[in-house]
Length: 179
Image 1: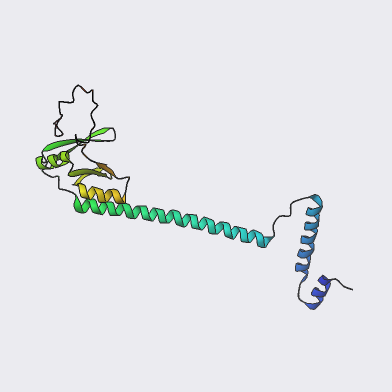
Image 2: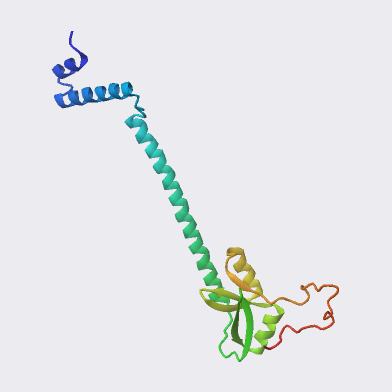
């Protein structure tokens, strides 16, 4: 009785090349089992696991790309709000000093804008290495969209808590003090 391999060859369902490949694969498998080599997964299982891994990578990349698009959209919204609502500082003759981080910066504004900045009804927004003066309600809208935008507000003296034993508590320092 002939083997299945011989029968397939006679029927024309397989050729010599396929027969040799099957024999070679069977010998390799028996040799690996005999030597104790981990046979591992089949090609179909490997392809399925690679497909799953690729799907996971694709989802991660899509999430990163979506996050980047969202960040760009937020930055564009903030820029649009600032451009639409900023005050014109041309013709400013009075310098207004403010602190950004550890650096003292200076803007030239008019006297009315300086008073509004000192009261807190106007705030300074730092965007792309440039500072803009906008109303306080606009700064609130900007903070809602982007918490990492630099917004500089005047600290009011009413909010500052003075220690009880402060010898200079009776002497109030004005907010609009010129430097």
